[in-house]
Image 1 (cartoon, one colour):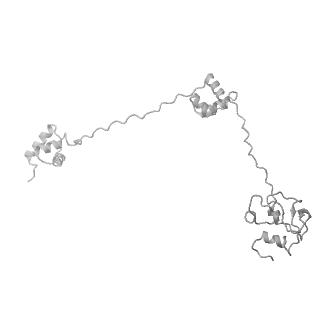
Image 2: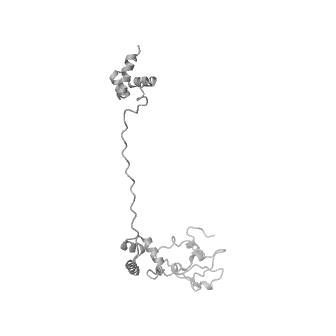
Image 3: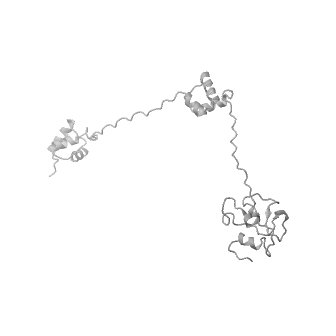
Length: 227
């Protein structure tokens, strides 16, 4: 048997006229809220005031968002005659735009603008000449690569690498300029000594098709059999 008898419908309608909500009527009658809402939809003539009942549980009002903070505009830096003179004095002392700005309370760009506008106060600085790199004196060399000596760091040890100790006893050295095509050009000087036409060389007769005599061939090419 349906709960909504004529008597219960009349009771629900009476409670509605008293201002009760769907939920309150349902609690009073011992039914669900949906049951009361369904009755109200079917009996619009009896429930005119609560046919469109607002949601019972009121939404808590969301807290108002604080108004966005507006950054206070920084007071624009204004150049005065006194500030210009101070900037000029700092510039004359060698201070940079940034250093001047930090002293006067502005940024380097502001100082740069002033410099462009008032070159009489902040003249361009002459670029200092870069310090000349101290050049080491050119090291004297016998230009051993020219002589085809491949043993600069291996065959000869010591600081001087004096090649004169490899002179052949009984063979008179000749200057490089005086050598002929068949005379050994092995240099008889310190390895790092300066070369030139007067550099003493072996001067002994070379092997066939070679630039060295047999003695110096074995020094230039250690471990290699003479051709």
